[in-house]
Length: 383
Image (cartoon, rainbow, N blue to C red; front, side, top):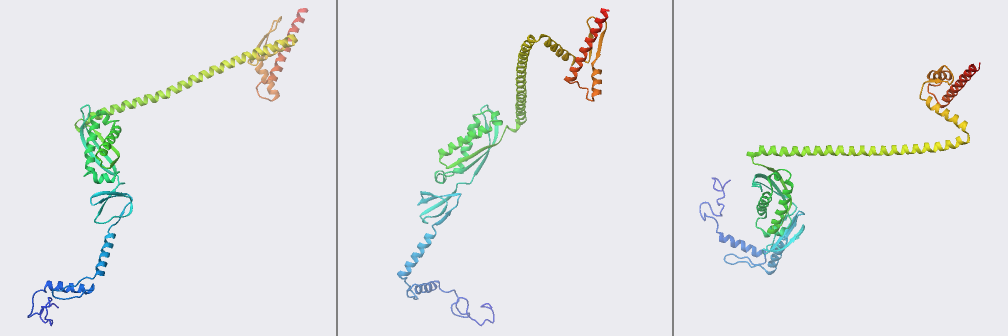
């Protein structure tokens, strides 16, 4: 029930006064402060009082308060540096040291620690229209990736290191592109341009003392202005066709030349083998003739007959039909060797192939018949 509702038996208001009389305003603020001061004095060993008197803090309590304040101050000095960070410590505004990752302590209110991330890869992209050495205009999109290599320089040397990187990047890119021709920028020269921009940009940043390290520079796009883009596309296509035709010609040459060299080597090897074969065969024939001559000198008739038989064997082995003209005879004898061999093979049950033994028997038969025929002719002449 509210204090001022009808029927409320408590006639006091919340300010300590009565409803129908007395002090109707709020209590005196000075009196409340004096009461609080008296109570604090009692707590810390002093004597509480009212009115104008105040309690006094004892020496032990003051020392306790001082120790507590020192402990709180010391605890405020602990902090942690993450693995990817480094801490730049400033003592009264002056650089003191660079702290490594881990739990660290520095006196608060005296030292100030600024944490700098040195592993995060930051990037900056830019796009610009610039003039080449041959007075052509190109549009280039470029991205730069970088990290903080020196936290002290990054935080203290330059007011805004990343803004300095933006300006230095613009300057380095325009200098490199302005030193080259347009077709190099649009075609095969992009990688070289990116390398030159990275070297020049890193030199600028080191000279400024920004503490930044460039890790990669990429030229994402390089093209001519839109008004002449179609003409430049045709030029690039023509260059690509030229390079393609050159590659095809080189591939064809690389395929033909080894084949020709291999064929020439094969011809030389075959000629060398044929020469060695002919020489070896001639030497073998000469040695065989010398040995045959020696045997002939020992037994002329036998050797002569053997030579005759061998000659006949070599001739008859390549012919299936023989015509024999006997000296002193009037008839010419015809020998169908193919049929004779077939009949002989049929009687023996073997194949139609004539071996050396069968050929020798056949030759002996032919010789015997020739002799018989010649003997018969002589007998008729004697009569």
